[in-house]
Image (tube, rainbow, N blue to C red; front, top):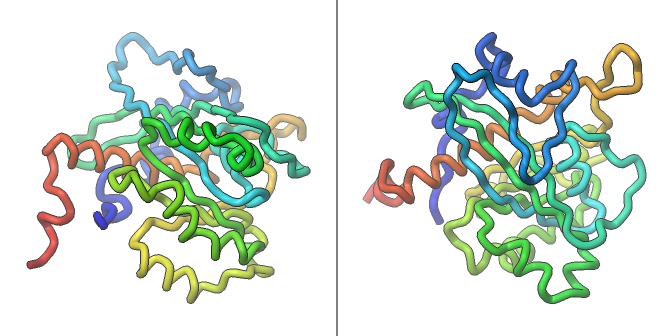
Length: 258
């Protein structure tokens, strides 16, 4: 199994907090609120700014109720559903994220197209899972810190979804980390899982995002700070995979000690 890149080795991790980073982030914000992009829309940058766009399809997998829809909402700067409703059919959401490459100091606009499908729909309709997996560049596997069964289901999810796609980027995300005091998944189990699977494992909170002074609208800039580690992680692993596939970087196996 290919080892993932070391965190921060491909993407400058805190660049979004710099003055330059904030200038680029302005194109996905409007009056401190996140802009919502349709499938055919893209951010508008000043004519003087030349930037390449890297587009990726990402399938979000996990048991019902672990927070797949809530995660995608947070990544897109949308309201997190207060009450859980099973996603009917397939829901697609586009998220743009500018990031700076460590090696070249070049800024790339990453376009992530998240595919979220309810567990019931996947079980009921045989064509749903193949549609979600088709041409996918990454799989996000979710479990909830408050649901032990969802963590124990991860190996089955990995086999079912990613078993026939060894080259696709795979990342694991633990949701509802804000409820960690009531966790059903102790740290020793996370460590054992990481050692066994050698996959990146991130944590996200599922609480509603911070709001602007009016108390009604979500604070888009503050929301970006809450999820930057997820978007940077995706950008890092996907860009690294592309560079290895193009022969521009040696594969992890080539770097492995004999």
